[in-house]
Length: 319
Image (cartoon, rainbow, N blue to C red; front, side):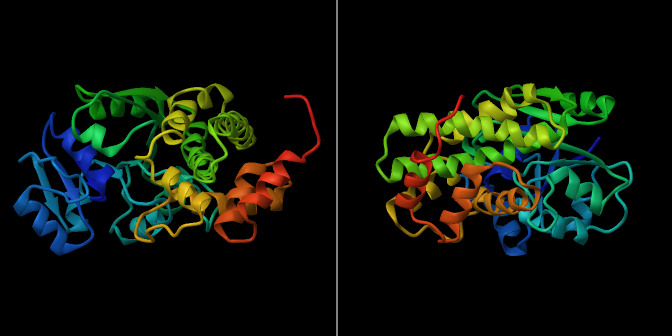
């Protein structure tokens, strides 16, 4: 059994550090210079204060890294398809575990759908839930959902990828798990806007609640189960991402609410996901008001006061 993490950002590096407690792990970085620096210094600048164990092999050789039997795909959602296209071979029988959260703007699908389109002979799974890279890397207790349609493979992956401080709960509801992880980022942006614009904690609580209903409604429309959204991959991740300044999506929303620019080098998965959801809602006649509002804010089609006015003047209804 061999494991490689493809993507040496903060989260991918944190997973490699945690898994190295159990044995050798390969960590692939896209940039060769960065890979050499990490291999030499045993540090990743994106995870300050965390030393890479000697059992983590850092490389920029994608083909060598992708020869592992289990690949954790820790790249941004919108680059996942491109990464899979770069890997040689069919990857037949290889376990591809998506560690990104979002909806692909080109296909409208989640990460496992992207995997199925690009590598249909591989075994697809998703690792998702409430987690910050720094917590995982420092060995703080963290619980995640490991979702795989193949229950036998899911059981094995659960054993292989759990560590003394990283506890995985298994599910066969891949759609529910990945949709929860995708949509909570959109709600986190909305909550950040709320706090950034000075609208208060009560408004944020309302957005989290109505946002959870929107997440569940969309996931179920895609074949997911409502109870999955009530677990780690939905409600758990929503609670973390909507309330912490460590969340990039939440900080991005705060910047929107303040009317400030946000660092363009920081990946904000929820911005692209909101735009994908708005397009799906329009095409299929789905009711996704929060996602559509976030997309309008991201694209500059509406201002924060206009969005607030729209929400507060909607017809009154039952909860």
